[in-house]
Each structure stands twice: as C-alpha cells, then as structure tokens.
Image 1 (cartoon, rainbow, N blue to C red):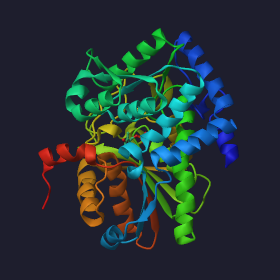
Image 2 (cartoon, helix red, strand yellow; image 1 turned 135 degrees about the vertical axis):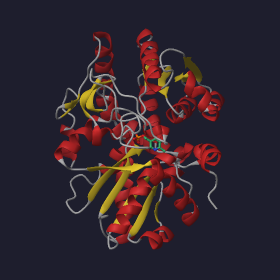
Image 3 (cartoon, rainbow, N blue to C red; image 1 turned 90 degrees about the horizontal axis):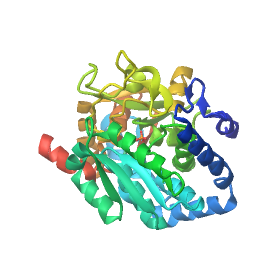
Length: 399
Ligand SMILES: *Cc1c(COP(=O)(O)O)cnc(C)c1O
C-alpha cells in the first residue's frame, strides 16, 4: 500500500490522466516551492510528532467508531459510524487545516489565505490560525456571507478577516478567484490553504495525506471491534477529502467494497444536482483536471445540493482516477434521501448529522436493506448543528 502512496500522484501531481497543474507561471513556481517544502518538512520526525500531539490533545483524536445498533435494527445489516462529527469544530476539515497550518508555520509564513463557500472550511482554517498565532484571511461571496451568518461570526471570533467578494454570482467560484489573487500579491509571507482534495498539485496529495488518519484509525478500530474488515465502506463526496481519507486504508482490500456518495439534489437535470462523477466528463477547473459538470464551452456548470459542502462542479483527481479504474463505486443520494437519513439518525441514535454526511448515511441505509448480512462502515464527516436552523425553517422537526 505504501507503494501506492509513493507513486500516486507522480512527480507532476498526475493521477493517471487527472490532476496536474494548469496555472500561470508565477503560481506554478509557488506551487513548486510548497511541494518541495511539503516533501522535506512533512516527513521529518519533528513535524510528525507535533501533528500527532495536536491531533490527540487539541482535536480530540482518535475519534471513535460506533456501532449504530438502533439504526441497524431498523434497516438490517450492521452499520458502524466513524465519528468525525466528534472532531474539534465538528467535522473532518480540521484534520487537513491543522496539517496545512503546521506546514505554513514551519515555512515561516505569517498568513493563511483561503476561500470558503458555506463557511465550514473558513471556520476550520481560522481555528488552525488561532492555534498557531497566524493571520487568517477568508474570501467569501457576499451571497454566502448573508446565508451563512453564524459561520461568519465564528470566523471573526476566531480572529480571521473575512473579505467579501462582490463580483459575478458572489459565491464559491468567485471566492476562489479572489483568494488566489490575494495570494498572488503576497506569496512570500502568505500561503494558500485549500479546503478539499482539489486544486493544483500538491494540494490533492497534501490534503489526502492529512486525512489518511481517518482511515488508519477506523481500520484498526473496526478490526478491534469485530475481528474483521468491513464488507462495505461509505462516504459522501464533495471535493472528496473525507472520502479519500477513509478509503485510503481499504483501497487494496479485495473483500471491502467502497462507495462514494454524490448529491443527486432535486433531479438529474443540469443545475439540479452536483453528481460530478456520475454525470460529468473530464475537464479543467481551478488549476487541475478532473471529472467536471460543464457547459458546451467547458465552463463549470451551475450545481445544486441541499448540502452546501457538496455542491462543487469538480471533484478530486484521485477520485476521478479511481472511478475510471473501477476501484470505488460512485453512487448518488437525493435531497429527499438525505433528509430522511438526517431525521432517522437523529431520532434512532441521538446523533444529528451534517447534511453532507447524511448523504452517506442515506446510502448506507439503502445498502443495509439490500445486504442485511453485511457490515457497513460510514464516515460521519460532521455534525448537524450548523444545519439545524435551515432544516427547521424549511422542513420542520417531523413528529
Ligand atoms: C465540507 C464538508 C464535506 C465535503 O467535503 P469533502 O472534501 O468531500 O469531504 C463533507 N462533510 C462535511 C461535514 C463537510 O463540512
């Protein structure tokens, strides 16, 4: 397995035909520097032991694997949850943000720059910046600033500067452009910290490596609990960071089937979903090649999901390759499936999941009904506190 991680991606950041770097020359150079630094620093004893200590004492890792008995009784099968919702700040995103910020600190950087859509990545990065006493600048579309007000407040409390982006559709894509521009103006003291396994090399590799801890822990915990490997492993896929983190420990296990769950939204019509691997075709977005939901001219299509953390028209290059190779099954769950799983998990287990994670739970519930004798390990990537107001305002509490 280690051979897989050493050769994937190759030195140019390619995962088969995907990934790489499609950037102007100045950014190429900066990415080259970050790549070199990552290879030399992240493999050092000092870096590894500091990250280990942070994970344990600050993040609260290892997060448990939990046997969801009531849910299993309801659906059949044996459903286990990897509880990333119990990670500090309530989701898996802090795993890579702490890694990226530690790298920044080791490089002598003073400022972290990033974009955020729903604000989850912004909050995780602002948390990491506070921990390391670094400045933090989060670019966010004006539309999202209004919609995601509590996360804007959180970022400010954590000491981050929130930069409103007022051009175009004023959402995630424009925020990425704005953050890249800010980074280009100041590449010496600042570093760009991406929010998933997307973007130009080395980000998909770095973020995956920082998320691998989820799979490493889960594999050991699951085998301690059951004496076996899981028959099925399920995770939701936006950019794909929580999924690749968990899948990475099972990629070469023949007896385990892997499922990446994309948001099917309201319908399969363009603009009504964000099922990139299911309906997209190869293209280029934000400096890398991947499956892409795109217009005739190659521009990214508008996308939609009830879970704002999943509505991205691209997807990680490694997932794009794993799809072509058939190593992972990419499937979908609709808004309605997601809502059903959201209410069911809350009621049956006392765990309110993030709407993103509820897509994975929805597919696991379906799989459990189809394969009642098998075990299913689900990545519960985050908790639903952030979604409660939205759910109650739009769908009520469902008696
Ligand atoms: C951001 C987010 C996701 C989607 O991101 P990935 O990179 O696909 O993991 C999933 N779950 C939660 C809770 C999130 O905040």
